[in-house]
Figure (cartoon, helix red, strand yellow):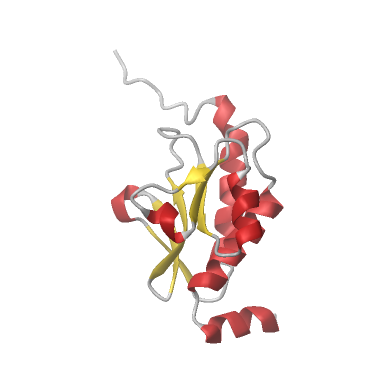
Length: 135
């Protein structure tokens, strides 16, 4: 008997995974951004510091985005997203917010990209922020 064929992620996760990929591509387009896979999960870093956690894309966990938001109004807005919560491992105390992408009413990709850019601006060196602003 042959091995079971991998069907990929469940249908319900396909749209959230497309959103995750759009956010990933946006983040990697920021000056100096690189993707790494500590713990087998995707993170995007600038200057060796994480500015967005993207988790896994294999369907083993619901897709989500975790960003650092220092601006109080933006942080509150992100926390009001369906299922959003302070990031685990004590990161929530430093302004990190985990936003699930598979929840009904999840934020639109453009808003998520705005939050990723804000997180980038909190983490990135001034030289790279100036480069971003010059574009």
